[in-house]
Picture 1 (cartoon, one colour):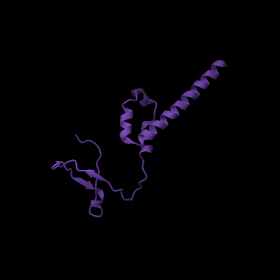
Picture 2: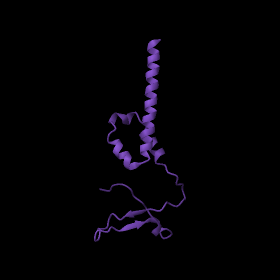
Picture 3: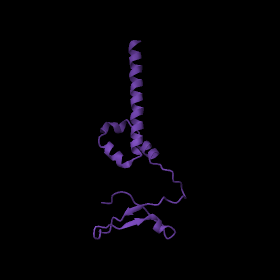
Picture 4: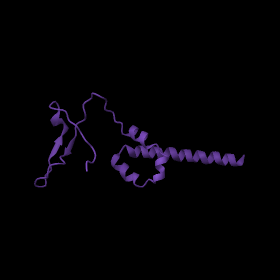
Length: 109
């Protein structure tokens, strides 16, 4: 009887800690730059205990729906050399109504 209570208490503590860790990771996933900094400290066995993929999809879902215009943004041009210390920039709104725009995020090395 005493062992069963101890076991239940230990499981309850584990469940609370697990939920707190999941909540913290979810919050960090909403900030991708911070997520990378945190994830390099997470031990590899945690990958088996945390449902990373569903959490990532939920955290990064956003509110944009099919057919809605993309929000405007302004980015430095990556494939042109900087001239006199000034980098060229491109703005999504500059293409609105002219032609389709394809955005590729990631590495192509």
